[in-house]
Amino acid sequence: MDEIREWNNPNEIVINYGVYFYQNDGQRQEFYIFDMKSFQNQIPKTFHTLLMPLSHHSEDYENRIMDDDSEIGVYLRESEMIDDGDYDWEENYYSDYKEFYRWHRIQYDPVSGKRFVCHHVFSMDVSELFERLNEEYEKILPYNRKTKKQQREMERLSQNINTLTQDWYTDENGIRNPVELLMNQCLLTEDERKLLEV
Image (tube, rainbow, N blue to C red; front, side, top):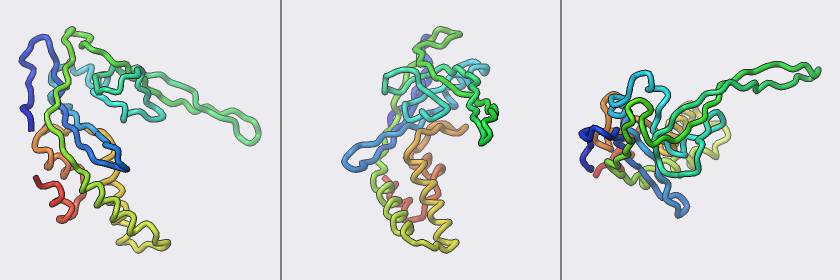
């Protein structure tokens, strides 16, 4: 694990992050763990929900990243209320207001003018764990009538696979041992945990 950088340079705001990766169909898949605690300690509290370190994995129907750069970075949130309503069977319109977010990459803190610097702290290969979880999931999947035990196991495996296919943020403890970070996010059996031991 690389050294975790503090914000010693008065002209920089440092965002520490880790990468966990696995091979899937010959492709390397990478996801990020951002150290939100250290980042938020360096910016005004009013910006805690408006400024976020993000990657393009963060995009979904209600969130759009407004640039073509695939690198991670710090983004400023712009929100917009949109009427996403529709017509019923009798052609009566009903409103359905939703809040959509656009994220704009910024290089500098809007208040202090300090430059954002992303610092890579660790990389962790979770290929064996990801493969094991998928194998276990595939074994249970074909059963048409699953027992409650099988259903619970499928939910556990699905939750773990989802964790390994998205970015996430550290809790109040910040970035620490990468294995511990991942084990706190996943519900792993003893055998699965052994696949993470370095």
